[in-house]
Image (cartoon, rainbow, N blue to C red; front, side):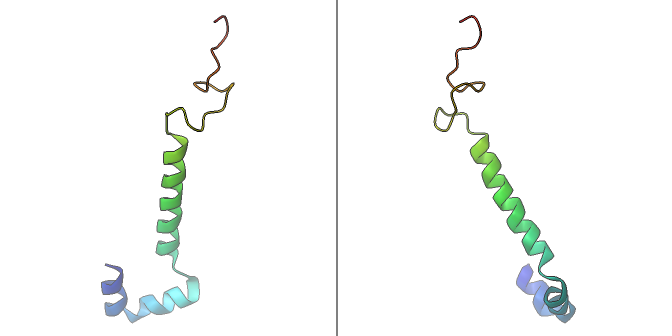
Length: 62
């Protein structure tokens, strides 16, 4: 879609030159956020810190 939009609308190229590629920046930020969230939400034993919920601490009274 990106190439079709750019080829059909020369104003788009001017806007990118003047303002930056805002949709592209948003897409890259969203992808990075999703990757970071996915890593943070992994529930496997790897990466858990002792003392935090689910991180190897048996909890009070156990």
